[in-house]
Length: 298
Image (cartoon, rainbow, N blue to C red; front, side):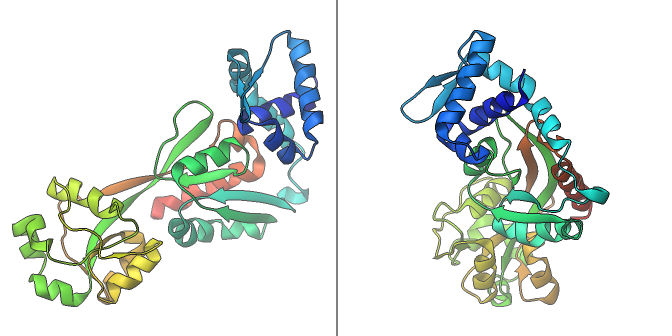
C-alpha cells in the first residue's frame, strides 16, 4: 500500500479537515480528496463522513488511524536526521503556558539548538493545545491537563507547588503566617487579590486545597499572565497565589513573603503531550527525553 496515501489519511484524521490537511501536506485540496478516495477504493470501505465543517472518521477510519499512525510516523522519520545526528532545518513546534515554557522548558532545550534544532512556540488553553496537536500544528505540548482518548499520549513531567504570597507590608499587617494558620481564610478576607482571571483559578484552587472552601473576595487586579501578577504582588497591589518556580527568587530576596506554609502544599502536575506514536521522530524523541531528564531537578 502506498505510504503517501497512508500519510495523507493520517493527516486528514488528525486535522479533521481536507483543507487543513492539504495545508499541512503542501498539497491542493483536490489532491488530498483524490488520495483519500483512492485509499477507500483499495480498502473497499469509507474512511470519512463529510460534515458542515470538516470531516468525521468512520469506525473503520478511526480503527485504521490508531493502528497505523505510529508506524507511518516512524517510517517518515527514518530519513529526517541530518549528518552526524544533527537536525539541520528541523523545527520543533512546542506549545504550553508562556511562563512555564519561558522559564523552564526553553532553557532546558537550549543545548539541542546547537545540534541544529530550531524551536517555535505557541500558547493557549489545554483544549486549544490538544486540538493543535491533533491537527499537526504542534509537535509537543506542555499542559496541566491530561488529554482524553487514544489520539494523544501524556507523560507526567513535574509537579508545581503553589504559594500564597504578598509584599512584606501585607505580611506585617497580617501579623505573620501564624495568624493565617490560626484564623484560616478569615484572616485574608479584607485583603486585595491579584489574579490572572476573574474566576480566580489559582486562588480558588489554593483555597479549596488548604482552607477547604471558596475565597470570599473577588479579584482587585486582573492581569494577563503570571509574570504580570508577580510584578503587581511584589509592588504591593495585593496578595496572590503563584507557582514556586516563578516566585522562588523573590521569596529568597525578601521581595515577597509566603503568607502561609501549609503541611501539604497544593500541587499541580505538568504533562508532556504528543500525538500517539509521534516520539518516533528522532528530533521529537530527543526533546521529549531531554525534558524528562531536566524536570528531575525542577
